Image 1 (cartoon, rainbow, N blue to C red):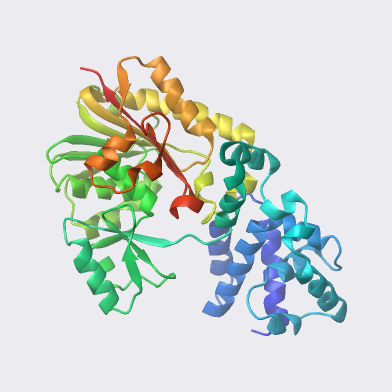
Image 2: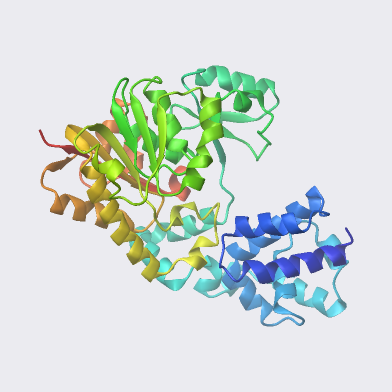
Length: 422
C-alpha cells in the first residue's frame, strides 16, 4: 500500500480507537473484518499505530496541538511505527518540520502527565503505593507483554517441551517463578506448533500460573473456579488434579465459557465441568454449599494490571468504575465462601494494581468473616516449590501475593488465601 493511503487508514482508525467505547483489540478486529483487502504488513502497521497512540495518549495529544490538519492524522503521524523516511514520503513539508521538532523533545522537556501518560487519579494512586518505583512501573507498562506458556503436566515435562520448542527454532527459556512456565522471545505464531496443537502447552502469563498454583488443587477433590472466563486457570488446576475429582468452571458469560471448549479438548482433561450461571447467587451454586474443598475467585476487576496488553483500560476506567468493581468483588467473595467445607481453601485474586480492589477487599472480607483465617502466601509458595517467594509477597509474614510488571515481568496480580476454620 502507498504510504499516503496507509497513513489515511491509520488516521481513520485513530478516530475509532479514541472513542474508547470498546477495547482496542476489538476495534482492530472489527476494522480488519471490514477491510479484508489489507495485507498482513498493513494490519501490523495499523495495530502498532493504534497501540502506540493509546499508550502515549497524553504526550501525543500535547504534541498534536502544535501541528496542522486533522487531529486524527496528527496522532497517526506521531504513533506511526518504523522507518521515518517511509512515513515522511506521505507528509507535507510543514508536517515533516513539525514531526522533526516533536522527535527532538525529550522526557526532561515534558510535564509529568506527558511522561507517564496515565489519568491523574490512577497516577496518584500508584505513586502513593510505589514512591520511587513509580517511574520504572510506568516504563514497564509502555512495553509489550511477554508471551508465556504453561506446560500441561498431564502430557509432558517442562524440560522436554523446552527441548521441542528449541528444536522447532523458537528462542525460549524457563520462567523464573512458575515451575510450569516457558517464556518465548518475540511473538511467534503458535496455531500450528505441534506442542500447542497437541495440548502440551497453553498460553498463560506466568503470574496467572502462580494464582492457579496457590489453589494447590489435589487429586480427587471438588474444586470451583468461580469466575472461570476462558479457563486458563481452570485448565491449570485440572492438570494439577491429575484429571481426577470434579472441577466446576463457573462464569456468567456462556460466550467466555465457549472459548474454553477447544482448549479443554486439546488438554485431554475430562474432570472439568463448565457451568454458565446467572449471577453469584445462582441456585446451582447454592446446591454445592459446604461441599467444596477449594475455590478460586479470580474476580472481575479493572484489569489495570494488564496495561501492557490492554493500554486502553487506563482511559476506560474511572474511580467510579473501580468503586463499583470493589463492591461486586465483595459480593462475589461472600457467596463463593459459602461453597467451602471446614478446612477448605479460598483464594481471592485480581489482575488489578489498585489497593481498592486488592488489600482493601481482602481486609474487609476477613473483618466480616471471623470463621476464616489467613494463610500466608509466602509459606504456600515455598510448599509448592516456587523459588524467591519473598520477592513476590507483601504484608505481614508474606501475607499476600503482589506481582508488578516492572519487578517480576508479569502482569500485575494480587492474591489472598484463607482457610475455613474447623
